[in-house]
Length: 409
Ligand SMILES: [Zn+2]
Image (cartoon, rainbow, N blue to C red; front, side, top):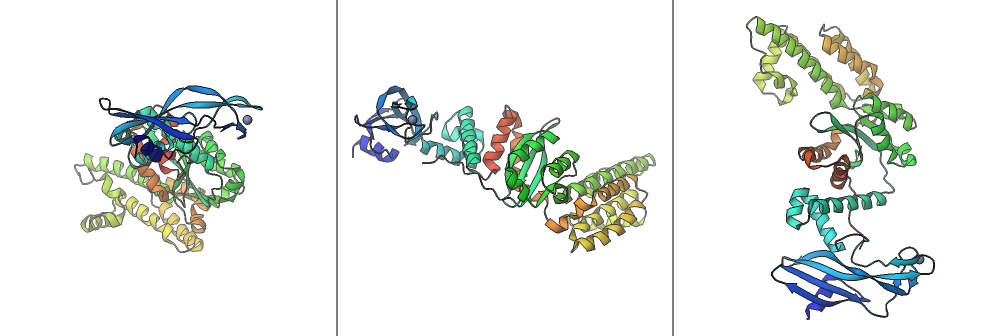
């Protein structure tokens, strides 16, 4: 088999295209494959797809292709221009690449696979492309995927905020909780951030969403309430976020009590911050026993800890009715605890109770998107490598969007 025939097969070139010649540069470790077309070939107008006569050719261009035995391989050709009666002189499409891409379709598919498995830095080394090229491939892949994502039938959505860099930079993520995918990412955590997220979903589909999990964050709640039919009743405040508030209250109580005790020379609470915040079942038996003894001895921190641990049980109730009964008992006890930070949180939950107990209708939580969190955390570490927010958005959608990223072949 001649080398031209071999590359014809490897590239999958079909009539009227053929490989005219192959040049090997052993010093540069590079193979150049020259493609030409039959002289009598006609091409389609890229606008209307009607067959048109050949007008002329553009300058020779090259497309990076998959390596041949670790030799960088480039396909070279002059793209034909056609003369369409309706659209004038236009550049025809070539079968091995998308318009304006500098890679063959096969190379682009391969690069997408590598980028999915590793980070941008790793891909630039493995595939030997620049950071900009890698990012451009990701961007085109995401645009392709978003254009194809027509009928997403999402039952449960999660609205999540993420700190994306040191300081106070945030992103708002709109997630499909069932599929564990990210639907959209916008900058900030304001009303506008969530509005932009929701605008990426066709309104008919938005109306079909049954429930939205989110933090007790007023801008999110307001926008969902007004942008979605019956939105207010569809909101489920995330249980882990609620327990997070209780954990903060517990820590305030601990710090105050610790300071008072240290003044009296008692250092028992020093350095215990994280023990109290752990879920009880994750504590060692003797630590737990010690906490119980401290509670019985009247330590405020230990009482706040009990309050928090009990609160976690709210979501284990069997029905909304059980939960409501359970809540009134816990609420009575918590509001009579004389632990001001805990009382504040109890009252806050009580003000939003219907959107807390809506959990028993929909049984959703933002924690379903833990895989998304892991990916976002990985990106956060490299946040300084992301020159702009839009790059961060592309990276998240590329990895977590569940999109069909490949170019059509
Ligand atoms: Zn045309």
